[in-house]
Length: 314
Image (cartoon, rainbow, N blue to C red; front, top):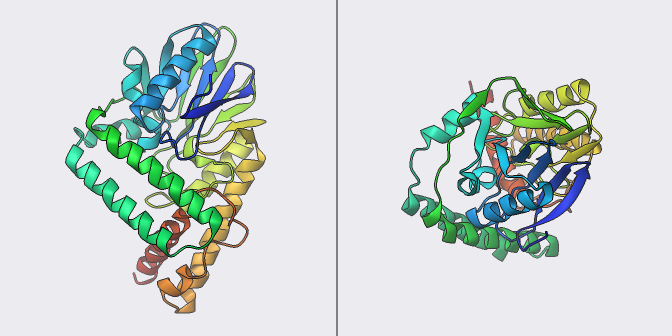
């Protein structure tokens, strides 16, 4: 069942995580849920090729076609494989559906230009690095971007047709799912999928395992509130995260701690009067140097630093 794009990790009875192989191009994790009479897939990875393998794997594991696909949010690494599930029904929040619809048709040239700019930027950061972990992670990232660049001409946007605002329940013969939204934290609208019978959460990018959370254009304050509400409202034993391995509820605390420490660190930087470049030279926040995607710490810092500067100048 494993392939070059993802490995299958059993999360609980009837639930599997399709965990992205670093550098393969699939990037975002997905999940497969067997409700007994219904198969559900949560997120579809970053590429049509990995999406096709995900559908095939789901059919093999459950012996049924995929009836529903849930898109946790609108980012490409969680929806670009949608086109391989055209016999399924797509579910998302109202806002995620609108965001995908508003993007319109794929602009192949513009998307490829933007990816080329990102690859150039990553190569520039790489040339200034001596840290082996950072070099490995940047090399993975460049491989992912190249795979996406090559896939863009074949990409089709797929818009969900079933939408919800706060909660949608699908009842199967063996287990059920609650598709929940507490607002936006990582993106403008984030859904999670909770399986009460197995106390398992498929978290999208609200939760990652030892991976730097990507913050720009989200809301870190709301993100923290959402995670604390999940802790309060749901008993979670197992998590399929948006990035990293299947794990347990400790990962919720990890992400809350990172976001809180990031806010405090950037607040200190803004108050110090020192330049953004001075703080960027300090490297990744202490305690998180060995996490995946460390190259995105700079992006997080710049975005939050400039957001706070704008807020302070109002």
